[in-house]
Length: 344
Image (cartoon, rainbow, N blue to C red; front, side, top):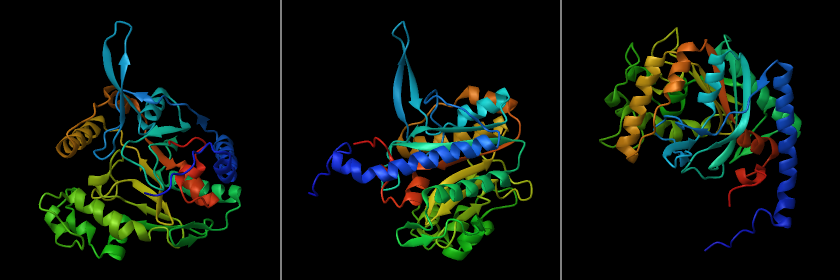
């Protein structure tokens, strides 16, 4: 059995972590200043929600809301402030950002913590490309604030100020996995499971769906190469993997969804936002059906969120894992080194 680490509040251990934590404070302050300079309003989204989000493989913390009459209602700690932020857009806000804690169960690795800090921001009636540019600007700002000339992680070392590589998901699959992804999608974006399975170099089980195979190829063959020489923008996700993103107006097979990578680490996930409540409900139901089949549970749909979508103007938004960005900028090797009070 490995030796037990001293608690995070041990003076010696805290002294080792303190330089990372002070750098964290400088980075967060610089980010807040960046948004203020661009007329964003900081909002503070409540963590307790009717629904934690409706993605099949995200796992929430559940609790009970006890009313004065002692009746109980299920509530969840949010996995993202996305639903709340979009309700604020429906209410009339136009440029907002939120720095806050979010909660995801079953997630604990060197780059995952069950409680972590997410930076999320939205621009009303501004293009999807703008939030990609924002994400790259904040990556550079974090590096400059921390004095980091290189980001390093698991054998990768990159210049965070270098010009970003832009790579479609289809191009990334062709380059790193030898898969013609678009050949497995019809003109309406519907996926052909067998067409992807026959191209896959990873093991495929009989009950694997197209999305199962896609996800494993992405994680095992593609992601380790992303951001290995410069920050990488992976964009145009297949429409069947759009989540809360709208379909591309240029190609119905793909969506306005991107992710930002550095040193093989995913830092941000952003969308040109879907505002079609009927389509969003269809996606939520499909995701919860999948969750029920795999994990034997499902989360409720936030009906107020779907109502807000009918009122929400076109917008673009993105969620960035702030702790991960701080890790890369400060040279930390574990997420708990950049959390002021990490989970024991």
